[in-house]
Image: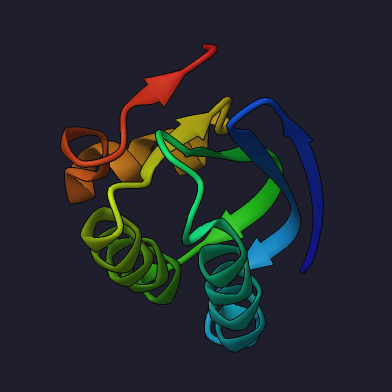
Length: 106
């Protein structure tokens, strides 16, 4: 898993590459927690998770998303999901992710 970050105004886009599974979960957690620390004092910040290059996601990935949602939400930072491939989109729909983190750009 690789994550590339880009910022524009109060929007930080995290473009994920590879598999979001038990092997990459800790890296993704730590990386997004660092983002949270950096955005801690930015008002109306939005984090967009770009899934267009994610090739696989399992239940561990869902757990990572839910835990990061909770942490970011406590700091009033919203998370949006961008352009997941069909198989990832299906998993997110079944897990109810979009009720917490809206789908954008699809």
